Image 1 (tube, rainbow, N blue to C red):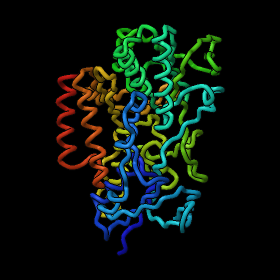
Image 2: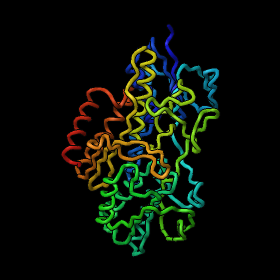
Image 3: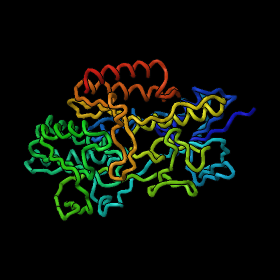
Image 4: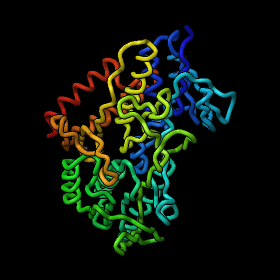
Length: 420
């Protein structure tokens, strides 16, 4: 029999993990994989948080040509214009349509700052590397003003519709440490405002407690339940009529799907409606949407990996004619950088169906819920920042091999000794 054609749209975390898992689990006579993306490299986005503080961007870009060639994966540069479900074809901006037996939509999320009047015009956003470089320039000016004795007020803002604000918390903590090292922290008021009921709401009460304590220790003015309604040149308006001023505004805007697919079931933000276990679309089981393109309420790299593993496993099992693969079991995992230390969080999650709090800690796996802060966790973040790009450069999935098993053991030991 001819190999099955699998087309993967997107070359981010979910797309590459799916493609590399299929290459690891199946032979060339079982599957022919094509990845479609709008660029010829992969950007290791978690480490773009260092860009405003002077880090180089070039090491974060991983060329894809050699990685794809190693795994006999075809790579097409272009963007999707249409998915012909009836014909099993994907139409692109470049070249002929691609036939698929199985389609993986991993085109991710985009930002919609226009949902808050004035946000796009007046806030420094933290989605692209270019935006983070511009933020770095603004922070240098803030330091210069502080050294001339001019008090500065820097506000970090999470508006409604944001699906994962962890990087914004990192930037706030990193800014505090960075300013202290330049001896100007006393001249800069750092403020954090979020619409959520608790800090980093998706990751449960323990991380909220850690953030609350860190904000108090660092003299960061943090407030939850602050729903912004309008942004002016130097002021913020919140629900209830409260108004606050700022000198520098840093925001993580609302999320929407980066591509909307006509005819496929999706929520009001364009995120595709998936089977929770396999990440197959509920209306088209031959199509999968792991990662940010799908409807899981939290958009985060580690969760994208887990979804990609489930999708690849389901596709591979079907092609081999074997029992279904392991289902997606959502566990959020992150290391929150602070420059002087870091916080580790491992959180088993369950969907609630409540739009105001769409996920909660899964109490059936409460023993796996771990949060801890230590300078040692910074080493863990650095290790992940080296390991993952190394795997992708070689065309290998993140969650496999001796390296991942060793890292898994290290995380397990660290979680038991440095977290509770």
